Image 1 (tube, rainbow, N blue to C red):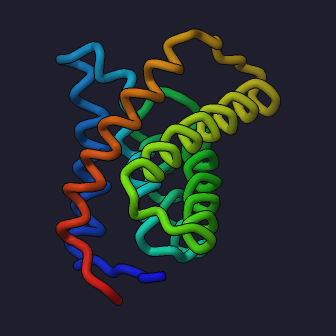
Image 2 (image 1 turned 120 degrees about the vertical axis):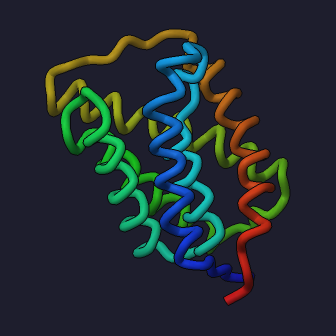
Length: 161
C-alpha cells in the first residue's frame, strides 16, 4: 500500500481554491449549490495520505474555514469534515482505493455520511433540523462525478513518500 506526499504549495492552494470556488460560484451559478468541493478535497487527501491524524486535522481545518465563510453556525461543517477526514483515512489504510469505481463508491457513501453528521449535529445539538429532500441523491451523484474527475486531476500532483 503506497502513501503519497504532496508539495506544500499543493496542500495549501488546493483547499484554498476549493473554498473560494465554493463561496463564489453559487452566486453566479445556482446549480453549484449541489457541489461540496471542500468535502471532496478532504476525501482526496484522506485517501491518498492514509494517516488518520492528518485526516482529522485536514478535515477540521477545511471545515472550520468553510464554516467561517458560510452563514451557518461555526463548528457544524468543521465537526462533520473532521469525522470524514478520519473515516476516509482509516478506510484507505484498510482498502486499496486507487480504482475509479471504488473511489466513486467511496465518495458516494462518504457524501451521505457527511450529510448524516451535519443533520444529526444540526438537529440534535443545535435544534435546527435540516430538510430531507430528494436533492441529496442528485447532489451525491454530482459530487461523485466531479470527485472522480477532480481526483484524476489531483493525482498528477502526488508523489510517493
